[in-house]
Image 1: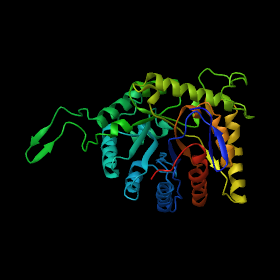
Image 2: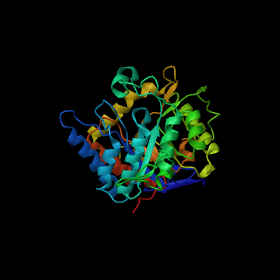
Image 3: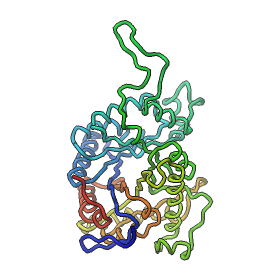
Image 4: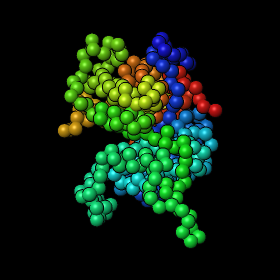
Length: 369
């Protein structure tokens, strides 16, 4: 779809209207009062449903002051909501036993009425050398952190046999596959990837694809103005155009290898902070947050050439214009905008309200329900 989308006086160019709008939170808490932080997250999810968001996603943090068990939190959220989809972005499988995780995912999916969207990724756990003795005391050197770990989880979720034993033994009945089994869950599994290799693997294995504000700049250099004229993404921050181009290449790689082709689901997650109804104090806080994180976006970071997208702060009109010209955004119709890590509950209420009532409609989205 060409042309533009207009709402509340905001006009933004768009290749396709936004179909699904979600948000992502890390669920920080105070070590002295962790319950309050978890309760705040549940209240934010409830607010998201009232505002008409299509989905709410939780990050995953181990040995930090953020949600370490998003599946358990989403089980609680499933009983306090009735419509909004509930996702993880993402569960690092290096910390998980695929069979046990498959049981938990299926259980929560059934409790939610088929609303769970598990996002996962693989690789060694962060700071593995310092935690492996506690996590895998007897098998640390033998653990497989490759895509095979994802394949095992997918198989269990989709109903493949986990054992060659089934039947009745005494008074007990045994199944050869994970129980409970939730039939639709296999089609709602997402892979969180930031490289061409992960995008290709997710497509080949029929998963959905989560692409965030972090990608791997694989052999790329910042594009010239003429090279990005089609997207018209004029930005003064070095590396921004490069980020959009890299992310676009991942989306296309994924869809090229997915059985559903162009219909394969991709969700983009950028940090988006509208300021329409923000107080002067909130606007100053948001701008300082983005400015502090800006230097990391100017060039690929470290030996892995990790590239970060700038946080988008401004009015919904300003953000809609920038998103409408973003090369990768123009090829997707689902988003899960990421909430900043360190803000207060009241800030999240303001940001989500502005996204749902101003930014989303400007991008062609209509509230659910």
